[in-house]
Image (cartoon, rainbow, N blue to C red; front, top):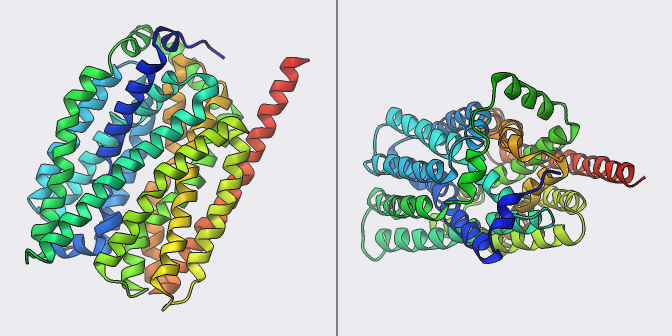
Length: 428
C-alpha cells in the first residue's frame, strides 16, 4: 500500500477540520437535488408535473452521473479538490435559483442535467478521494462513517427546518403549496452559495500538493493505470457491493409517495416520518464506521445488507391500514440500516489496495458501476407501477431490491475472503 505523505503533514485536528468541511458541503449539495424524498407530492403540485416526469428527470440525472463518473475520477487526480468542490456548490446553487422560479417541465430537465454535472463530474470523485487521503488506513471506516453520518445530520437538520417552513406557510400563514415550496428551495440554495467560498479557502494545502505531484503523466501511463484498475477483482466486488447497497438506499426515495398515495398518510405526516428517517443517518453511518474499523469492514457490511434487505421486504408486505406508529418504526429501522450500509461501503476501497496516483480513477470506475441504479431504478419503478398499479407495484419493487441486497452481502464476504487470502500470502 502506497504511503500517504499528506496525512503525515497534517495534525489530527487539521484532518478532522477538513473532514468537517467535507461533511458540510456534502450535506448541502444533494438535498435540493433529491427534494422528492420529503416533498414529492408537493413538487408535483407546485411544478405541474407528474411522478413519472419526476422519475424521468432522475433518469437523466443518473445518465449524467454514470457518464461523468470516470472523467470525474480523472479530474480528481489532476485538479485541486477545493476548486472542483467550490465550483460544484456555486453551479448547483445557481441552478437552484432557476429551479425556485418554478420553470417549465422542459427547463426542469435542463436543471437536472446541470445538477448531474455539478454533483457528479466536478464533485463526487473529489469528495471520496479527499476522504481517503485524509484518513489513515486504519481509520477508513470511521472517516467514511463520519462523512456519511455527518452529511446525514446536516440533511436532517435542513430537512427538519424545511418541514417547519413548509408546514408554517401552508398552515398558519395560509399560503399555497407552491409559495411554501419556493421558500424551502431558497433555504437550500442559500446554504450552497454560502459554502462555496468556505470550501475554496479551507480545503487547501497539503491536499493541493498531492494533486500537483501527479500532473504531467503520459498517455501510455494513463492507459497502463486504467488496465491496472480494471484487472483487480477486488475493484469489481467493491463496485457490486456499492451498487446493491446503493439500491437499498435508493428504495427509500419512494417512501414519501408510497406512504401518502398507498398507505393513506397526510403530506405533513409523511414529511415528518421521512425527516425522522434522516436522523437515523448520523446514528447508523457513524456507528457502522467505528464498528467496521474495530471488527472487519466487509463482514459488518454483509451483516448490515442482510438486515436492511429483510427490513425492506417487511415494508413491502405490510398491509394497508396499519398504524402510523408501525410504519414509522419500519421506516426508521430501514433508515438506520441503509445509512449504516452507505456509511461504510466506500471503506471497502482500502481493501482494494489501490495506489494514490490512480485512486481517483478507481473511484470513477467503481462509481460508474456502483451508482448505475441512478439510471435504471427510476425506469424500473415506472415500469412496475404501470404494470402493477398501486401497492403491488411498490411491493415488487422493494422485494427485487431486497433480493439484490442479499447478493451484495455475498459479494462483501467474497471480498473479505480475497483480502484475507492476500494477507496470508504476504505473511508466509
